[in-house]
Length: 267
Image (cartoon, rainbow, N blue to C red; front, side, top):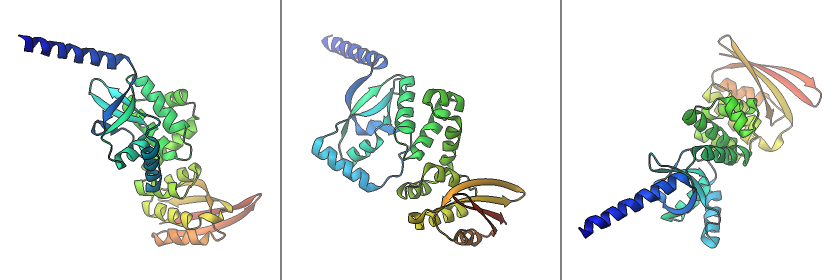
């Protein structure tokens, strides 16, 4: 009889704890294996995580990782601090200090603030966060504009970055290409041409001098895009395009402050 009473007491405690979780935000240690990424981590250099791990080993985790607790699924999802989490994993820490939020609107606000407003040097984090909110919350771009304060066109352009592969994102990040350049590269439909352009831009990165306007024409379709070129000879770029089975013709026009190139590409 005493055993049954103790079981009942434990059940009541567990129920009360779950009710508390539903209604509040709180800080607690959570088993590392219970935490999951809802937004794919951005491809960053290993050195950054190693440096962060060394700092945590010396000073401790100064800022808890923010997570969202889904009471219905009994799941914890990382919404801010994925790099700190990677550093803690590198240190083989079994438990992580977390700031837990349980309200989904608060979760969305933190995701927008963390991924879209606080780190403009990594547009791929912004793109992944926006895509996650659209897929899981069925937000329209107009609703995201209202919630984040970002311009409609910028959100629309950021979403294009999600078509780039993990390796393409890594190369563009470590070479510190601007958001505008990354977006325009994402508009290239041919994977091989896109790879050739990225390679070219990286190899010539120190010598940014010109602005080029490129127009691609293939199968009776055409689209234009602008991006910063990095070498005096645009013929190198057309050579890369032609290596991928296309023919390219160059037209050059002098403009105030730069040079405009039109490259017509046909299969």
